Picture 1 (tube, rainbow, N blue to C red):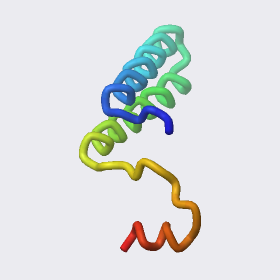
Picture 2: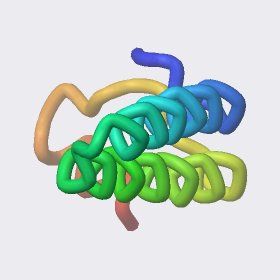
Picture 3: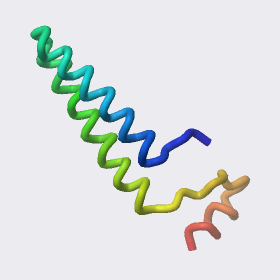
Length: 70
């Protein structure tokens, strides 16, 4: 399972924001705004990752998935 911890997501967001600043300074505003939006999305995911517990495995069948949701 990939690392989706709050710290990892915040690190990714900071990287994307730095890339956006670089692009904006180079006159590539469209791409800069896209990456800045992606950074915001990652920060929101970081907040959610810190508040909710992920299921550590994928269910093997639909019955298991249903039981996990009830």
